[in-house]
Image (cartoon, rainbow over all chains, first blue to last red; front, side, top):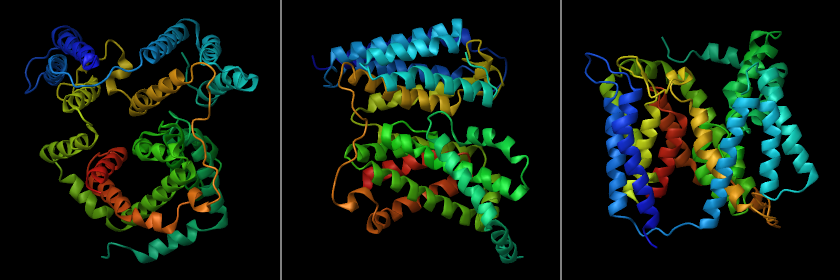
Length: 141
Length: 295
């Protein structure tokens, strides 16, 4: 149905803007006495703009067609996999999770060639670990 | 006193253009291109990696090597921008906007070479400007106050006019979200933390490379992954198999036709970036938008 996507995204931005204005900004921005501009002034203005634009999209959508639902579902699945992988990295460490995450994603997108699987699952994570941990001396999650 | 000290410049050229120093420039450029082509590892990080290797060198070859790494890294950033729609460095964001469509047409070599030639042209003009008129521009930069900075920011937002697309409301939302992300970190007036959610790593704001990778690379990766679902994995870019060599090289007429665009990028870069903190990628996008609107 034309306009449905804009209504959905408009609702999202309306809720996002109001949440920022009424909850996030008052909670996570410190208040100070004095000065010309409070630290929350600029983010509050931006939050209101997002909310107003979201409302405009909600009540006056354009004729944009909805994208392919199957593609959206697949993309959402990959996003969920990546988020789960990042969470697992923070819990168990990059060394243990990176290869599993790479293997899962490569198998999911249909990659079956042994060379590319070996490259993505073993070589690339090892190279990242070597560059970041050994060469740069930085910590991986 | 002359602004340009010719004798010093000539002496500098004599020191720089030795085979030994040029060899270090060459190695630096090669290393920089490899590192710059990896999204997320830009020339700055490449120089950080390379600095320990220069401790055993004399000053001139060491600096030549590091300058080579920097220049090579900037060019290398254009390679994934053209081939994968994923800028290797934030400066290559505008390259992706024009280079990737050209690569999709089966002309990745032309797009990559044009990025290389543009980079060389810009760097050469930049060096000439640095040598000749940097001092007067520095005086101008020192005179810039809050009013001029605000004017410059408004000028920066005019980029949106070229990128906003069919929906003004969506463009405003995108710009506002960008500003919201930029407001994370230290409040400039009171120096208090703002929207850092307890993560003190964010006190200096979100790092631009992370934002660029997150916004440009991750979205492109997700798009490709969703398209590749199943067994239809194919090369991202297919080089057109053609008998005409002009399809794989930039001709002089093609390069010359871009002269005004190149000069405008250089103009923006020098007069805005040196006089303020206007970033190179913003200059490029600005010119790109102008080009799409007026040419």
